[in-house]
Image 1 (cartoon, rainbow, N blue to C red):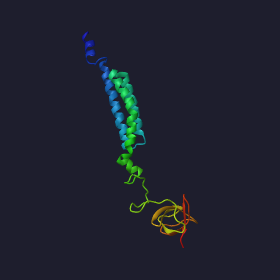
Image 2: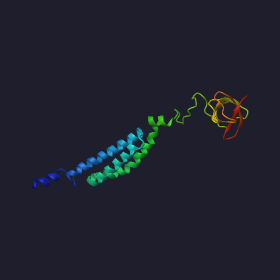
Image 3: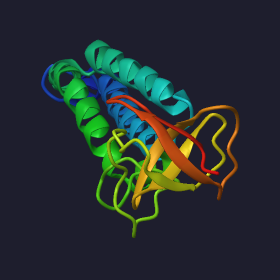
Length: 186
Protein backbone atom coordinates (compact mmCIF):
# COMPACT_ATOMS: atom_id res chain seq x y z
CA UNK A 1 0.00 0.00 0.00
CA UNK A 2 2.85 2.38 0.68
CA UNK A 3 4.36 1.62 -2.72
CA UNK A 4 1.43 3.10 -4.73
CA UNK A 5 1.74 6.67 -3.39
CA UNK A 6 5.50 6.52 -3.97
CA UNK A 7 4.99 5.39 -7.58
CA UNK A 8 2.47 8.20 -8.09
CA UNK A 9 4.98 10.78 -6.89
CA UNK A 10 7.89 9.30 -8.82
CA UNK A 11 6.24 9.86 -12.20
CA UNK A 12 5.78 13.63 -11.82
CA UNK A 13 8.26 16.47 -12.03
CA UNK A 14 8.76 18.89 -9.18
CA UNK A 15 5.31 19.89 -7.94
CA UNK A 16 3.43 17.92 -10.61
CA UNK A 17 1.36 14.81 -10.35
CA UNK A 18 1.54 12.31 -13.21
CA UNK A 19 -1.97 13.32 -14.38
CA UNK A 20 -0.72 16.86 -14.94
CA UNK A 21 1.55 15.63 -17.73
CA UNK A 22 -1.50 14.65 -19.76
CA UNK A 23 -3.05 18.10 -19.36
CA UNK A 24 0.29 19.74 -20.17
CA UNK A 25 0.64 17.69 -23.37
CA UNK A 26 -2.98 18.34 -24.35
CA UNK A 27 -2.49 22.06 -23.76
CA UNK A 28 0.67 22.11 -25.90
CA UNK A 29 -1.14 20.12 -28.58
CA UNK A 30 -3.99 22.65 -28.56
CA UNK A 31 -1.47 25.49 -28.97
CA UNK A 32 0.13 23.70 -31.91
CA UNK A 33 -3.27 23.06 -33.52
CA UNK A 34 -4.19 26.72 -33.01
CA UNK A 35 -1.01 27.88 -34.71
CA UNK A 36 -1.51 25.50 -37.63
CA UNK A 37 -5.17 26.46 -38.12
CA UNK A 38 -4.48 30.20 -38.12
CA UNK A 39 -1.55 29.76 -40.52
CA UNK A 40 -3.70 27.65 -42.86
CA UNK A 41 -6.43 30.32 -42.71
CA UNK A 42 -3.90 32.92 -43.85
CA UNK A 43 -2.81 30.79 -46.81
CA UNK A 44 -6.18 29.26 -47.73
CA UNK A 45 -9.04 31.65 -46.92
CA UNK A 46 -12.00 29.82 -45.40
CA UNK A 47 -14.15 32.78 -44.36
CA UNK A 48 -12.53 32.80 -40.94
CA UNK A 49 -13.72 29.34 -39.92
CA UNK A 50 -10.24 27.96 -39.35
CA UNK A 51 -9.10 31.16 -37.63
CA UNK A 52 -12.02 31.03 -35.18
CA UNK A 53 -11.37 27.35 -34.53
CA UNK A 54 -7.68 28.15 -34.03
CA UNK A 55 -8.57 30.92 -31.56
CA UNK A 56 -10.77 28.49 -29.63
CA UNK A 57 -7.96 25.92 -29.61
CA UNK A 58 -5.62 28.63 -28.29
CA UNK A 59 -8.02 29.47 -25.44
CA UNK A 60 -8.52 25.78 -24.59
CA UNK A 61 -4.76 25.21 -24.69
CA UNK A 62 -4.08 28.13 -22.36
CA UNK A 63 -6.78 26.97 -19.94
CA UNK A 64 -5.37 23.43 -19.94
CA UNK A 65 -1.84 24.71 -19.36
CA UNK A 66 -2.88 26.94 -16.46
CA UNK A 67 -5.22 24.40 -14.92
CA UNK A 68 -3.11 21.28 -15.06
CA UNK A 69 0.31 22.14 -16.40
CA UNK A 70 1.96 23.18 -13.15
CA UNK A 71 4.71 25.78 -13.25
CA UNK A 72 5.84 24.86 -16.75
CA UNK A 73 2.26 25.07 -17.99
CA UNK A 74 1.70 28.49 -16.45
CA UNK A 75 4.93 29.84 -17.93
CA UNK A 76 3.98 28.42 -21.33
CA UNK A 77 0.46 29.88 -21.07
CA UNK A 78 1.81 33.35 -20.26
CA UNK A 79 4.29 33.08 -23.14
CA UNK A 80 1.46 32.06 -25.50
CA UNK A 81 -0.68 35.00 -24.32
CA UNK A 82 2.19 37.42 -24.90
CA UNK A 83 3.21 35.92 -28.27
CA UNK A 84 -0.29 35.61 -29.77
CA UNK A 85 -0.80 39.27 -30.76
CA UNK A 86 2.70 39.45 -32.23
CA UNK A 87 2.14 36.25 -34.21
CA UNK A 88 -1.17 37.59 -35.54
CA UNK A 89 0.46 40.86 -36.61
CA UNK A 90 3.29 38.94 -38.29
CA UNK A 91 0.82 36.75 -40.19
CA UNK A 92 -1.16 39.79 -41.34
CA UNK A 93 2.06 41.52 -42.37
CA UNK A 94 3.23 38.48 -44.35
CA UNK A 95 -0.17 37.81 -45.99
CA UNK A 96 0.10 40.36 -48.83
CA UNK A 97 3.37 38.76 -49.95
CA UNK A 98 1.92 35.27 -50.40
CA UNK A 99 1.18 34.08 -53.96
CA UNK A 100 -2.50 33.62 -53.13
CA UNK A 101 -2.83 37.18 -51.82
CA UNK A 102 -1.12 38.59 -54.89
CA UNK A 103 -3.47 36.60 -57.08
CA UNK A 104 -6.58 37.72 -55.17
CA UNK A 105 -5.67 41.40 -54.85
CA UNK A 106 -4.58 41.78 -58.50
CA UNK A 107 -1.28 43.58 -58.15
CA UNK A 108 0.93 44.42 -61.11
CA UNK A 109 4.51 43.27 -61.28
CA UNK A 110 5.47 46.80 -60.16
CA UNK A 111 3.46 46.34 -56.96
CA UNK A 112 0.75 48.84 -57.92
CA UNK A 113 -2.94 48.10 -58.26
CA UNK A 114 -3.93 46.42 -61.49
CA UNK A 115 -5.93 48.31 -64.09
CA UNK A 116 -7.49 45.50 -66.12
CA UNK A 117 -7.78 47.75 -69.19
CA UNK A 118 -4.18 48.96 -68.99
CA UNK A 119 -1.79 47.50 -71.55
CA UNK A 120 1.66 47.30 -69.89
CA UNK A 121 3.27 48.60 -73.11
CA UNK A 122 1.23 51.83 -73.02
CA UNK A 123 2.08 54.83 -70.88
CA UNK A 124 0.14 55.02 -67.61
CA UNK A 125 -3.15 56.89 -67.45
CA UNK A 126 -2.61 60.61 -67.30
CA UNK A 127 -4.40 63.12 -65.16
CA UNK A 128 -7.91 63.99 -66.37
CA UNK A 129 -6.84 67.42 -67.58
CA UNK A 130 -6.75 66.88 -71.36
CA UNK A 131 -6.70 69.74 -73.81
CA UNK A 132 -10.15 70.87 -74.96
CA UNK A 133 -10.50 70.10 -78.66
CA UNK A 134 -8.08 67.14 -78.58
CA UNK A 135 -9.26 64.04 -80.43
CA UNK A 136 -8.93 60.40 -79.67
CA UNK A 137 -10.58 57.00 -79.72
CA UNK A 138 -12.89 55.33 -77.22
CA UNK A 139 -11.14 52.17 -76.02
CA UNK A 140 -14.29 50.84 -74.39
CA UNK A 141 -17.99 51.63 -74.42
CA UNK A 142 -18.60 54.87 -72.54
CA UNK A 143 -21.83 54.23 -70.58
CA UNK A 144 -21.36 57.17 -69.75
CA UNK A 145 -17.88 56.62 -68.25
CA UNK A 146 -15.07 54.71 -69.93
CA UNK A 147 -11.47 54.89 -71.11
CA UNK A 148 -10.33 56.82 -74.16
CA UNK A 149 -6.97 57.11 -75.87
CA UNK A 150 -6.36 60.86 -76.32
CA UNK A 151 -3.01 62.15 -77.58
CA UNK A 152 -1.42 58.76 -76.81
CA UNK A 153 -2.62 58.76 -73.18
CA UNK A 154 -5.33 56.63 -71.58
CA UNK A 155 -7.82 58.89 -69.86
CA UNK A 156 -11.05 58.06 -68.06
CA UNK A 157 -13.73 60.12 -69.78
CA UNK A 158 -17.39 61.00 -69.36
CA UNK A 159 -19.55 60.80 -72.51
CA UNK A 160 -21.72 63.81 -73.28
CA UNK A 161 -25.01 63.14 -75.05
CA UNK A 162 -25.41 59.40 -74.48
CA UNK A 163 -23.43 56.22 -74.90
CA UNK A 164 -20.34 56.14 -77.12
CA UNK A 165 -19.28 52.76 -78.53
CA UNK A 166 -15.74 51.41 -78.37
CA UNK A 167 -13.67 52.37 -81.39
CA UNK A 168 -15.58 55.63 -82.01
CA UNK A 169 -13.66 58.83 -82.59
CA UNK A 170 -14.16 61.31 -79.74
CA UNK A 171 -13.32 64.98 -79.14
CA UNK A 172 -12.68 66.53 -75.71
CA UNK A 173 -15.41 69.13 -75.11
CA UNK A 174 -14.58 70.04 -71.51
CA UNK A 175 -11.81 69.25 -69.07
CA UNK A 176 -11.08 70.38 -65.56
CA UNK A 177 -8.98 68.96 -62.76
CA UNK A 178 -11.57 66.28 -61.97
CA UNK A 179 -13.07 64.99 -65.20
CA UNK A 180 -12.71 64.95 -68.94
CA UNK A 181 -15.91 65.12 -71.01
CA UNK A 182 -15.95 63.85 -74.56
CA UNK A 183 -18.44 63.78 -77.43
CA UNK A 184 -18.53 61.92 -80.72
CA UNK A 185 -16.17 63.50 -83.23
CA UNK A 186 -18.04 63.98 -86.51
